[in-house]
Length: 196
Image 1 (tube, one colour):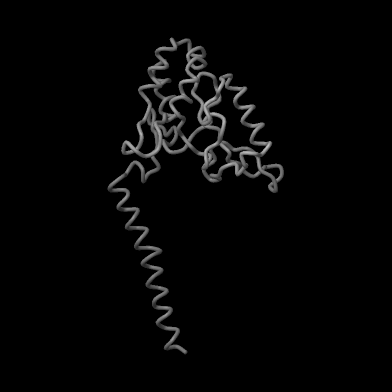
Image 2 (tube, one colour):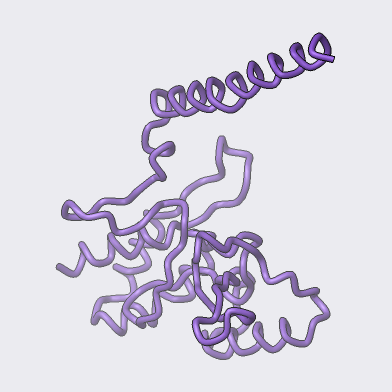
């Protein structure tokens, strides 16, 4: 019995050390060498303080800021842990809404978001949540339809705000992957710097 059990336990310990300790340490160390910013969470620092991550959206609600995609993330309700409440961009609860395109709740949410934007037709990314609920980007069209509101709230010429949006459009990754996009946090930080 011991002759059968001993090789199994030795292999268990060996593979635990190999795949549970050595491999994660090697991958983490390699990531910190080859891509230190990304390995550290792509943190955005302004005036010595971390203001966010380039990879996770934030809830900007004021008219003077560009708004990101709606977030479908939730958190446990403090009053009743069996229920949930909205918790936009909660990275600990990344998920989509899981609502079908035919769902009444989704149709009502999209209609309410479109009405709040006051733009017809509203860009799809401003009225629907992303699959993760954490998307930090909007489409260039999604940013451009907000120019008039942001410019009016800040007392800036629309042309200056539009130019800022156009300078913050990121091209497709490697020229072929994804779509052109605008990082909302980076755009809002540039907007704040413009009006200082």
